[in-house]
Length: 92
Image 1 (spheres, rainbow, N blue to C red):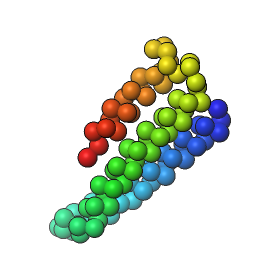
Image 2 (cartoon, rainbow, N blue to C red):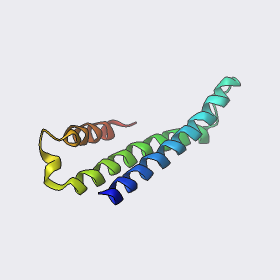
Image 3 (tube, one colour):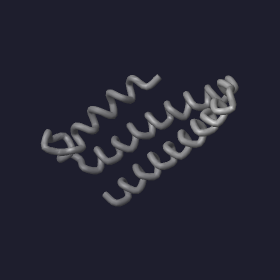
Image 4 (cartoon, one colour):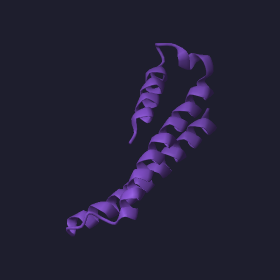
């Protein structure tokens, strides 16, 4: 369980860091009066998709680690599993 939690945590943390980095770069460009380069805007879209996919993967790892207890409606992870898969299907 600890290994699954660690793996899920690093997936989310790395995706968050990358998303914040490229979004920050685009924000700085915007503050200078530019819309940013096409490559930078594409990087933000890619980072957004990557963060969503990494979040789905992280929840899947935890869901698998909890086995059948994760499928019960009383499990907080059951709702989050449905939510993240729904959100992941709608990114971009």
